[in-house]
Length: 209
Image (tube, rainbow, N blue to C red):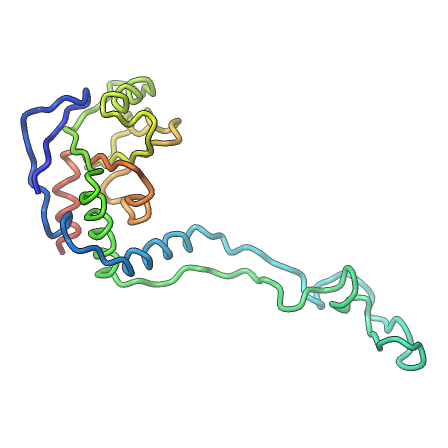
């Protein structure tokens, strides 16, 4: 599919780029997308939750009353899980939520995400640009020129650009990443995907393996 290339002022440069059909025009595999997004979100979980069990609660282990004759249920120590302040039964323990996915499935998921965005016409190809110094106002001007000022957007660079990244860092609705940092979740969790020309070849090369 052909997409016109815009400059950072939002104007048509008169050039077009050919996006690979094998990356941007496949039939999306929803289950692959689901698994990749699930893995990404699982990896964000710290898994440091912990509840004290009976052996870890502070308290005496003395039997608090005699076994029989009280008219109530028998009870051992005050650390009994049935008592207030007692231990927790089968409480959460520190664990890792991460799980493995094959590289082929993850590539399929990213290609599916790109194809979804392309089908929705939410991909913008922008010529490479740079700022002399980090300047948030300059980045806002780029967003305004592209009509993305009030929309969630993701800018994908071919290689790391400190000035462009720092210029966007204070903006909650816009993120800047390199092509190697792309994830299926990031692609789908945005209204508009802005691909700089320098990132296209790297994206297609990485996903065509």
